[in-house]
Amino acid sequence: MAAPLPTAAATAAPRPSPSIAAAAVGTRRERLLRLRSLECRGPLGQPAPAQSVPGASSSILLDTPGLISPVKQKRHHLELSLLEDPWKSMESADLVVVLVDVSDKWTRNQLSPQVLQCLTQFSQVPSILVMNKVDCLKQKSVLLELTAALTEGVVNGKKLKIRQAVRSQQGTRCPSPATKDPNTQSVGSSQRIGWPHFQEIFMLSALSQEDVKTLKQYLLAQARPGPWEFHSEVLTSQMPEEICANIIREKLLEHLPQEVPYSIQQRTIVWEEGPGGELVIVQKLLVPKESHVRILIGPKGHLISQIAQEASRDLMDIFLCEIQLRLSVKLLD
Image (cartoon, rainbow, N blue to C red; front, side):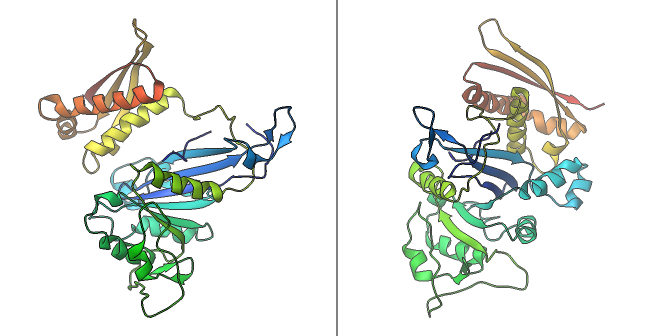
């Protein structure tokens, strides 16, 4: 998404400034996005209205651990910060964005208990529902069923109007809340699977620039005045080594099953410029079990090679230089 990107101080201006936490259903990842405005200056240095100056908004994305339960944290011996950080992030959020992958038939029909607990505990924070990958659905009527389930048939305090939802198009806010009539429907059960307090719903495909632009404009419109937390030229508060480690960690999470990626320790051994100007990175992956070593390496070393190649491509896009990444797998002593 174009809106979310991280990064002191400036005076408050008459435009944007929210924080947005996005709990991704399916990946169980949570993200916090902040939008900040700054004091804008005109050509001669005089104060200028922020809305009249391009780029008057700053968005900050804090990529925090996924929402996990204390049981899983103990079972997999995960760091306590993985359990606490997402909740701490929510404390500074101004808007919660719940992102659902509608192409995933295993997770799309209900919000996870952790997401619902988070929404309930921070119910004072406004929230919206974003249904992504709608282009993957052959039957658009599925969107209607999912919307009714994930919202319990209620949006912005009003019943959801089914007929309007059917006619709604991708990339727009939909469906619209409506007053009660014979064609409305709500979903309810003894065990909650949806959240009836979303202010808006967006159905989109992240591949569509128009769809993303629609959502981005909405997020910017929700911004409130406030000081910038980082200089406008700062893109991220992370160190390059942290970015690299997180990219590799992302690939591990994508390719490895169950608890395997969470037990891997990463150690950067080499970080230097090569003779041709390329960035040479060597990272050692320490694994606690022999069986996990075999899983990570894969048949004939194909999996670890694929992870390294995918991470290298992402790092080249970020650092704008050639990347030479080597990953080694070792059994943890």
